[in-house]
Image (cartoon, rainbow, N blue to C red; front, top):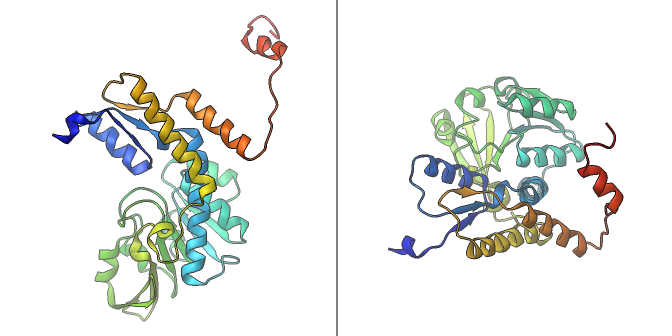
Length: 280
């Protein structure tokens, strides 16, 4: 039994952490896991900046399309969706965010993005990018409203965020018009284009390069230090957070690699922060 010889593990992805937590809830998890994905030094940089940038680069490389002036619909406003929205906005797109969580939806609105529902956005979107980690967030009822030439892709997980089976059902024919671009022709003649078979567009396409090393070094450092922490400590079987000191250490190491020196608190300032008498 291989599992009996495994001390534990660490998980890099949002989808993986969700499933591991679900396993623990159902008493199906048999080894301790450290949720590297959820720690700020990973989530705020790899997910947001890494996936955001690599997704937009992949869409542009695969389609040879400009982002400027396009209506880009970002489905999901977690760290990945935030990064995609930020990058496409910076390139001149008119960005709309679709979200089910009221706090994230409000955050998107306060950042200046248009926020609406999928039914409405499907009428005017030029490029649809899913980043939800969920199932069939773009479905048949949305395809039927889309404009001719709309582009659909996924940067969330697996290949189930865009309902490809539903799209096949309402299409009269489909064909690969370019590498990693499949065209679906609807009954009324409109054509919709799906990139990289609905899989992670920043990784699955021939022209997709994934994250640059400048962002992955932080994630791999978190993985290595988390596993070292696991070896040195007898962790119970559950999904654990990355210790805060590891998170801060990786951020500090990255700053040093970038030749950035930050301010340090004085002794007086540290005493002030720890005191309840001063300033009251």
